[in-house]
Image (cartoon, rainbow, N blue to C red; front, side, top):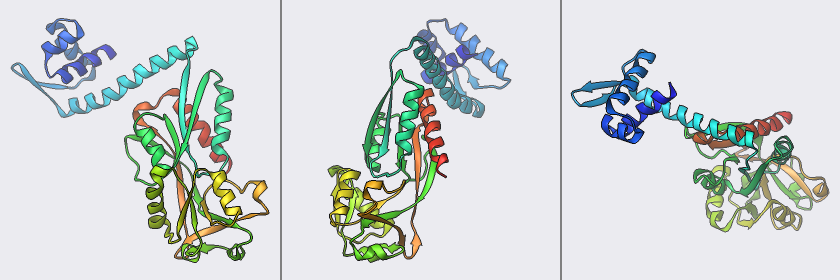
Length: 296
C-alpha cells in the first residue's frame, strides 16, 4: 500500500496524472490504476474526477495530509534502522536553558551516553529565545526550555516539571532573613539575569512583564558567573530548579519569589519538532522525563 500512497501523493502534488506518471517513471494509465486500487483498499473516494481534471474529496484531503506524516516517518524509520544496523555515526543535537539550576539534564545526558555509546551528543546552552531559534532553524533536535508561549502543534511539547521560582541572594543582605520576597521588595537591589548580549533586552522585558521585576538589571554570561556576583553582593539572581550547590551553602540563601504575594511558578518542558521525532530524539526525551519524575 505504501507505494500506492506515494503515487497518490505525487498526483496531488503535480495536480496532474500525466506529470505524476513522468515523475514516477510509469505510464499514465498505470498510475491511475494504482490510485484507483488505493481507493478500493480504503473503501473511500479520494479524488473527484471531472473529465481530465480532479479535486480532492474531504476524505482525500484528510488522507493526503496525514499520509505525508506517515511516509516521512516511514522514511526516517528506514534510515535510522540502517544507521543502527550499520553502526553509522549519528549526532544528537540538544540544548538546555543556561539559567536552569537542576541536575536532571546532566544526568539524562550521562545515562543516554552510557546506553548509546556510538551516538555523538552535541550540547548547546542559551536563554529561552536562543534555544527556540536554534530549534526552529533545525540547529538543535531537542531542547530543555521554559514555557513562555502557548504550545504549538508544530512541536512535541512535554511538561517535565512545574517549579516554584526563587531568588538567590547573599546571606549578608538583610533581606536574607525574610521567609519569602515580593518583586517589589527588591526594587533597590540589582537583578542579575543570565543572557547573551543579543538577548539581554528581551530577557529583561520578560522578567519585568511576567515577574514584576522593577529592579535595575545587570547581566551574567552563565550561572557560575551569576552566583559569584550574588556572593560579592552585586545583586540577586532569579532561579528555578535544583538545590543550592553545597559550596554556596554559607554564602547564598534561596527565598521564594512572589508577585503581589502570590508565588510565581514556571513550567519546564522538552520541545522538539513534530517532523523530527526520530528514535534517538524520543529516547533522550524519555530518559530526561524519567530524571524529572525521580525528583517529584
